[in-house]
Image (cartoon, rainbow, N blue to C red; front, side, top):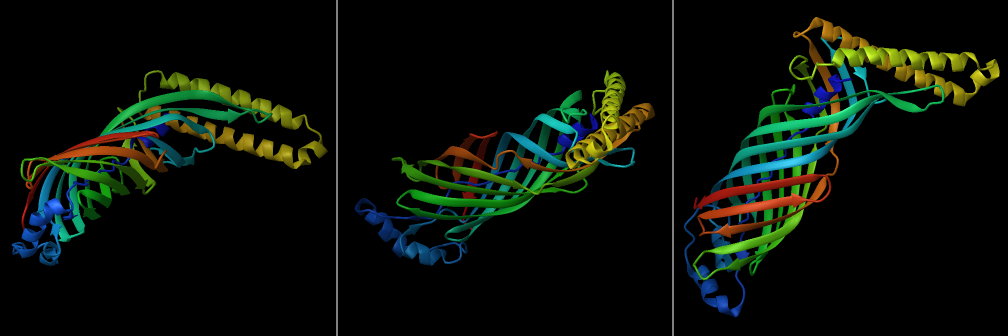
Length: 373
């Protein structure tokens, strides 16, 4: 019942993108001959990236080999819940997939993270992620049970919203290639988010292909890059934990809903029993009727057990807890992204990116500082 709302509260893991748009660029064109010649003859002064000196001698313009960025990320996404188990006060947990239907489940999250990175090779950047996360999940759902004709109807509705804080940490890499200011980057990272409602950190994998173009300004080392691409999030779906009942569920009017739910379940059970007892022995042996009878009884039994557990938890009061396990996933794994970055010089860059389409909307902005290592 409303215990299911708790499940959704922790069903969302914030996936944090951390790609910063710098890359190794092959200098081409007659007007850039002087730049290419200077790269070939200049001594490369840094230890990283590996083969950095060889790359510059072949006419590649390298970014500074190390960097540090501060990123802000916001995201709103629809999520899907499956394999839902709920129990109260460490009692039996019931699978509610058959009787609970979610009309809407939306997760909103924001994060601030820091991202140190190095260029390990001229075409491969590796980085770390460490950040603080705030999440909010809002749901609307209902409990549904069948009648004697296997027509399902809602006997109770519920909705709720809760906020959680946590930390995110991860590792990533970005293979890139650039020629004449045009570039391709394949950003990917694995990250873990440790929310205060989870038994263990939730894991995600992000893949973000981008293709773009950098345009130079007259000011040395100053340019602007624009790009388009995609953003894919894969979440490790298993989640389990325990939450206090008091303060997380809107308990006002809940007891009345539970009492009404008992009445409706009893009415449905009586109708199913009357239908079954009115069948002849041959009709009861019909596999179709057997299946309808078993399905109805199973759903009504689960609904009754759930209502009883909620009723008991409400009588216990503020000490009541809810235990849960579930599998969750974003409703859409992919969405489209566009972005731009202004480079003040080779040390400082300011970036913004927007993602849309499907059931996920996101925005990110970051400030980056780079230096030689």
